[in-house]
Structures are given as structure tokens and as C-alpha cells.
Image (cartoon, rainbow, N blue to C red):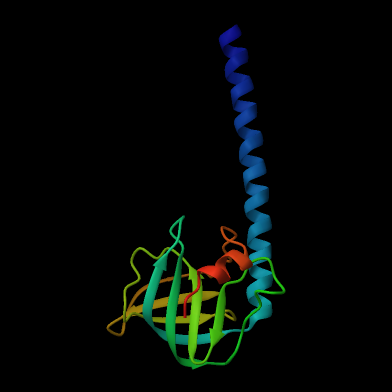
Length: 146
């Protein structure tokens, strides 16, 4: 009898944890969606430097070949940001960075909520954009070395 009660208590605890986790995840997705919807970024560039961070994220440095935004630095006005753009260069805060390599071509479309990664003109991966909350803007800006 005590074993059954213990199992029931554990099951209820796990259900509560999963529910809370889903709510937090849903909130992060809404924040991310609103950020990218307002960004209106279309950018393509070539990777020239990668600085790996924790949690599979990285600072991915691009030489821009095409963009609709020539200068972008929201770091003073937001808690988190996805990219900085300056002088035909961009830095993306993105992941998973484990398979991104130097000279890969990256295309970012906030309109389509998509990042696409190409190697030798062949698509190797694409996934939805996500605003990482692992690092705050001020901390990230200090890590960026153009």
C-alpha cells in the first residue's frame, strides 16, 4: 500500500514538473517568435570565425554577402539578442554550432523563421530561429571580438 502511494506521489510530482517545463518552453517560444517577427532580417553570409559557447551555442561570425539591414545593435535596449551587424560583418548567437564550419554559407530569414546552412552550395541543415536566453546582451557583447 505504501509503495502504491509513493508511486502515485512520484507520478503527480513528475506531471507537475512536465507541465511547468512546457509552460516555460511555450513562454520562451513566444518571446522568440515576437523577437524575430519584429526583426525583419534577411541575411546571407560566409562563416569566417566561430567561438563556441556553452549549451551548443556559438558566436558565428559572418562576412555579409547580402542583407536588408546594414547596421544593427540592439544590445543596449534588449535583454537578449540574436545578432549584431556592423560594417559588412555579422555575429549570430546560434546553435547547434557543432557542425558549422569555416567557409559555410548561412542564410537567415526572420520572415520565414529559418536559418539555413550550406556547405559547397549544398544545404546541410535548416532549422527554426531561436532566441537563446543563455547569455544576456551585456555579457555577450563583451565576448564579441570583431
